[in-house]
Image (tube, rainbow, N blue to C red; front, side, top):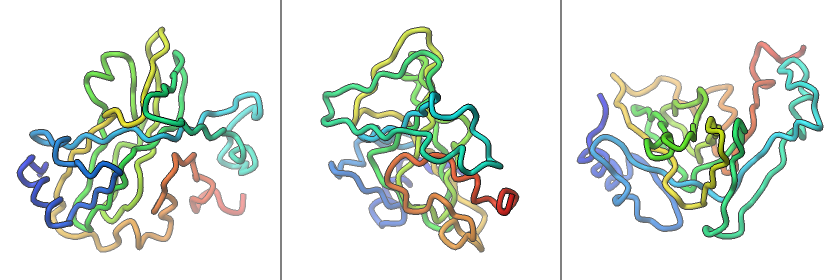
Length: 196
């Protein structure tokens, strides 16, 4: 069941959903069935001139393949070029309880410009804590400017039938727990890629 605005506010007030941001104004970003999150100041861009291919069976191909960019202030734009893929991060840090999942969705207003905020990783596990890495793609033929602290995505919260037996923080392969920056893929830590 998807939480309503009323239930999101209750869970935030009780601390069952944890949201941390510099502004502490989470309630203004709650809508009928979701909550907007804002874009952070950090981006990672892939340096295609350094690697011929990104290969999960070759961990070296995934190392040092991105460049971290930090914007100085919220008035400075980050330009996403047509067909470009970059990693961004939410300004907010979230913490989910063991019986709640969240789904990351784009905002309609940005979608109409051609910005996609996740390619496949739109699911946040129960027990996750950290920022949300955004997989930002511009499918438009024109460059698009994004700004820190602008509302960039929304979370819809769903209750589970019961609390998870193994929430994300207890999972043996919880590679992204506690992340603060946009994190590139850690697929080489998956069991099927170890020892290859």
